Length: 400
Image: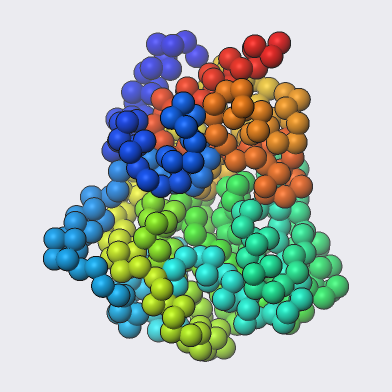
């Protein structure tokens, strides 16, 4: 791609962007993305967006500040849960029962508190690497033992190893911690795959917690399937962890939801200590409600931008880093990059940070199948993607 064509693509993408603050304003942010590294490092690691907040969210938070509304959350206020249920009905043809939902600070709390009540100490919990790195810690915190069943990888797509999960449950594992859609792979599991998983889990009398935090970020042409919709067995034995934090960039506002369908799982949620819910943030309630109810146009624009940025990334790789392969998923704003052909070792992100001043997440953090990979966040201005690829290419050229 010539510089002129690159500039044209970048201009086209920028025109479609939700507003992106200038780089100096971004560096004034106090979130992890913009404070973890010196100013000469391009931060494309942690899953935070550079996009300005959706206008309805920003207006609602500003109004709350104006009225000095900074108190405790009212966990009996179901409007936030209702907004999620309405969104799920419109986007996924699924209307969760609001009365069977509960609040928490974040999806990690949903996962840990759910597992504590679904497994006995020391029992195995299946995870499917490459997968979100904190899953290992969540299981340890809940008192469980990690059982790894790596994803099947045919070189193009990733898929759950259902036979492997069956064997793990036969051997004594009591739960599956599902990443739906997948992080870092962007895998959107099919309804058929999830239905078969539900039958396997039911046959063993086990349980599922499905982390669906990236569900609103499924790309055009892909269909997200909520786990709780695939079968009666799934509705009986599963809890979903839901949040607007990734879709609307609200991680610091601390609100997530337990979602259940069966009376058994709803009772488990309602028996949780009240403190699990009241630790959530009032501004998280407000922002989540506004996002799911009034931020949908912004979300659609954000997804379109992410897809356009992935196209920019692919073209930049083709032109400047042909040895790097983008394993294109169908969800999230996270790009899974295979650097193994470049000889940068198991964790190419270490070399890239040291030699190119670009911060990515190293593949080994996602489990053994991540060796040779790195994860790059494309929820940013396209110019940052162009700059990151060219920095890495220049560093490789100096290496010889």
